[in-house]
Image 1 (cartoon, rainbow, N blue to C red):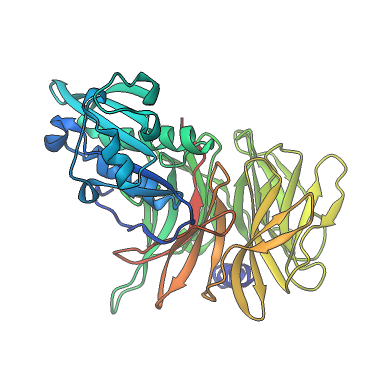
Image 2 (tube, rainbow, N blue to C red):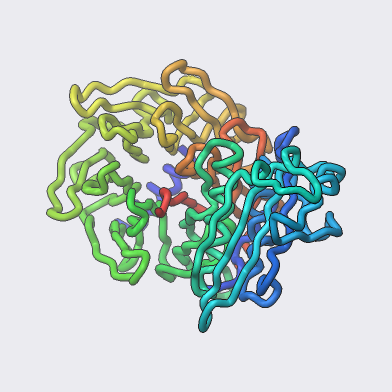
Length: 439
């Protein structure tokens, strides 16, 4: 409950847009047997387009850890039309799949993008090769939408080959802490693309910001701000920046978590004494108490079916994860491995929870199978990890980590085989939250 204790300490004290990448995604470990795929530079107006679509797709697939990408520098043939492909060359390269494309300027700042995914082993040189085409599509977008389109193409390819919906079009929220000599730290609530690009601030403050949480539709973020030297929970519209206070009770207002239907927030309040979990109807402000005891109950997370909550509590003497059945009000302990488990986050199907786990003084990210009761570590780097958040397809877990003395974000696959780092170029990054699917 390291982060919890720090947060409560803050509470007690207080109660008494950029286009460049802020984060730089770095693959540190991928799976053996990754799918070999060649991605040819898109032809036509591709070289002069505002965004290099083939390079973005290459980076997306490479950084997923599930693909071995042959990009521009690995090949000397660059087809952009199905009829121009020498399949024997790409087989000799070691590729199993091939992506080609063409960009055409069709109006003022309007681009038509054609792409195709092909099976290299089904194609024959100098022949009609419709059987080699796995999928193909075309889109017309403005220049400013070429990067989002590239991520969308990556999602399509990822799902076609691996059978799982891609997460390249999702977004991240996190708190950036910027420190300058002789000045108080600046806390910035940032939102960026999944690969770290297109970051922009939602809020900048000299006071701490904590616990950002995406609404299920991805349009709003709830967070804790310590403006005016008191804790308050705000809900902010991501698109236009409008925001409002939804909880400002005496004492702790913390750890907001959206219900699956987006109508309620589970949150932590200490207005009546010890921290307990409440449900707040966002539209009306109606408040319902969910836990009723003198323990520290915090960090709620709704099950995807809306029938239960998991939360962190020290009711057994040490921080562990408990589950509250909303129909019966029964509470059961679900975590037993290690001497500390906290900050639970559900996978999309509700079968597993990611959590912060401590054993022998080391904080790592782990995954618990709720049905089987099996727990396994996803990280084992011995660094100071915190705040796990599961990707909407369940394939990856985002978390905060300390690496070479700097706070940054990490990602690890749900099987522990793929690991990435997202170092920040301009500050320390913490308290991350992964968005839902946005379309």
